Amino acid sequence: MTTQAFGRTRDGCEVELITLKSKHIECMLTTYGAAIVSIKTRDSKGEIRDVVLGFDSVDAYERQDKYIGATIGRCANRISGASFTLNGETYRLEQNEPPNHLHGGGKGFDKRVWTPHPIQDGVRFTLSSQHLDGGYPGFMDTEVRYTLNGRELIIRYKAVSDMDTVCNLTNHSYFNLDGHDGGTTILDHMMKLYGRAFTPVTGYECLPSGRIVPVDGTPMDFRSFTGIGAHIDDGYDQLRFGNGYDHNWVVDGELGSLRPAAEVYSPNSGILLRVSATLPGIHFYSGNYLDGCPCGKGNTMYYKRCAFCLETQFFPDAPNQPGFPQPILKKGEPWEHTTILRFEVHEIRY
Ligand code: BGC
Image (cartoon, rainbow, N blue to C red; front, side):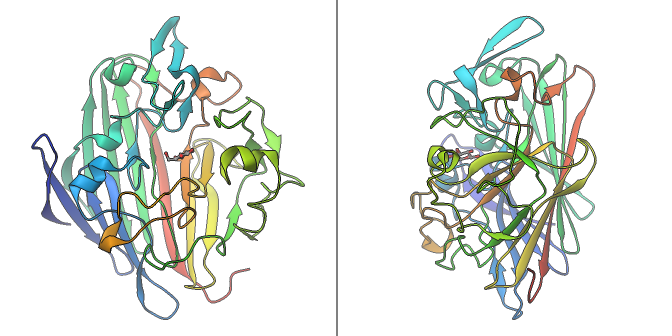
């Protein structure tokens, strides 16, 4: 692990840039938002490609509102009505996507400066969050560990609280397996999701109805490799509501066991990303609202659908959906989950 100064936040906090290296991957992270800044790996021709979106300055990280690369907390995705009830108490959160709450609010964990600690093959970021921070109950200590192991970037989350609370941590990286600056969209990428069912939304607010619906016969069926762009503009209601894909799939298998969740392959670069996780869901977002602002690394403009996110998570609005697995961190019991991003190179994959 090597560390260098990245700059200062508007209120004067020092921010660092940390580099991890394995034989196959070089990954840069920042203490601002415990975010992934870059992931460099070789394509099928041996050329190095940086396959995630990111920014060159702390100022751009402070200004961006797309959660690019960041750790999301306390709760990923939306909470309807920006409130939930736990143990008989109702908690009100910031309506940063009125009238709902998105990704922990406008000053969620993605907008905090985390403390870095070197560990074997990686770094551990820690953050303390006060009782009622953002409206959430309980004093919560959080850590995110990033380690490299050959072709894998392993992300381990751990949180503890002195009261029962809601906790749903994820990473919000945007990937383009041809490179963040390749000038291409992700519509030609081929994707497989290990999800036989998804959680449909009720309308343009992208809130789940609470139902869990099989993907059979719908454009949500990615059980075998399918082009991301193959059906994205079909006149299917769910895709109209999301302006493309912006949905949660139920990952096959058992919550808590590490199992495959997704694979994405670029026929152009030959890079294959495999995502596995212990979490119950995976949110596939096709970058529908990227709008070029602020400018990305090396002055690259990040436009609509130039990258995709695969956020391993508890389902959206789960605190208000009793039929969904609950993202509850119990007082004194650690909340622990793992996501692994594995980068391989293949000539033909489907
Ligand atoms: C959400 C999108 C949102 C994006 C950026 C995704 O996780 O599902 O609706 O636009 O994050 O905020």
